[in-house]
Each structure stands twice: as C-alpha cells, then as structure tokens.
Image 1 (cartoon, helix red, strand yellow):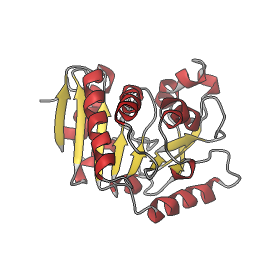
Image 2 (cartoon, rainbow, N blue to C red):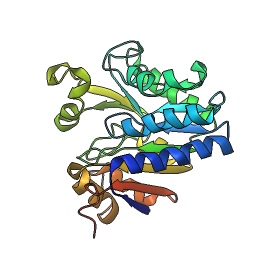
Image 3 (tube, rainbow, N blue to C red):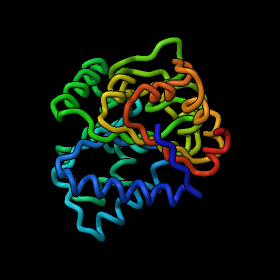
Image 4 (tube, helix red, strand yellow):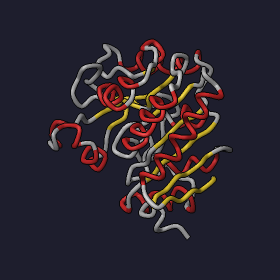
Length: 243
C-alpha cells in the first residue's frame, strides 16, 4: 500500500479530485467505481468544480457505485442513487446510460446482483475503484463476518453501519434499511487500481488494522493488503494510530 497523509480532508479531497480529472482526460472511456457516505462529499464537490472550470468531457465515462439500500432506488429520499445525483451526476455531463447503480427495489435481488456483475464485466472491469472505510472496517457494505461474499450480494447491515447512515434518513435510525446490495470483495479487488479515503479519528482504529493488522474477515478492509495497486489517503485524525 502507498500511504499518503494530509492535514485535513479538504486538501485530501482536492488532491484526489485533481488526479481523477487527470485520469479522465488521459482515458476518456475510463470506468470508475464510486462510493457514497460522508467521506466523499468533499471529493465530489471538488470534482464538480474542476469539471466546470476545465470543461471536462464526461460523455464516455462509465461509473458503478458500490452499493444501494434494499427497498430504495431512483427518486427515493435516502437512496444512494439520489445521493449521487445530488452530489455528482446532476452537475457533470455524464450519459445516463453510463451510470451503473444497483436497484434496491428490484423484484429479484439475486437477479439484480447477477445483472450488476455482468454489467461491470461487459464494461471491461473497473479502472479505478474509490473506497471509504467504516469504523468497523467495512468497505462497500461488506460487513465484518466469519466469511465474506466474493460477488455482488445482499448484505445485512450491522447496527454501527445503520447508525452511521441515519443522517440520510433525518437522523431516525428506525428508517434506515436493515439490508443493502453491495459489490463483493472479489469484485472490488478486481479493479485495476484502488484508492481508499479515510477521514476522522473514529476511523483510525480500522485504518491501523487495515494497514498493519492481519488479513481477516473481521476487518474486510484488510483484504486490500493483497491488491498490487492501493493508495490510502488519510487526514490527521484517521492516521493517528499508525506507527
């Protein structure tokens, strides 16, 4: 892993946004894996700004998001589709057909997961996968467990993860879905390059375990240790436990 430390999350976001815009310019048909949650909000703000100023061409870019809540989809408040529209897609000239999202309202969730795997494969795989990390070490919605799913799957969300997402539902924990669809660990690890962002002291223990700890399904992010091209971008808080 390549470890990069930043004074704050704004500098981190600006640095990664600059790199992403450069990657799009270098490879217009790039395939990006994108995260949601609180951590990438500053990143998407910077990407929007740089795309406008530089007239970046998003017309051939393909994207695939990591996850979506079961029961939610396009137009639903609290859905990750709505989040992505508000934070990024409504602000750049990306073709709607090039946006890959899981549909948490699909009649067959198993069929939806299989469809998503095929779509990523048909796109040629992910060139760059951007990740966040949960305080419990999850990436996507791959939660700590005795075993991890390799492919896109239905995931049961732990209480800590549901509390972390309560802000999308007016702060009401009872409204947060108990399950989600998520890319699996093998799907994530097949990306050509992975960039993980972590901000805040509450992530520091998980970050330390991911980098310095053993490979374990109890800390799913630790599996990034086996990938040949991983960059970990940390603010001061997230890096505080590193030796």
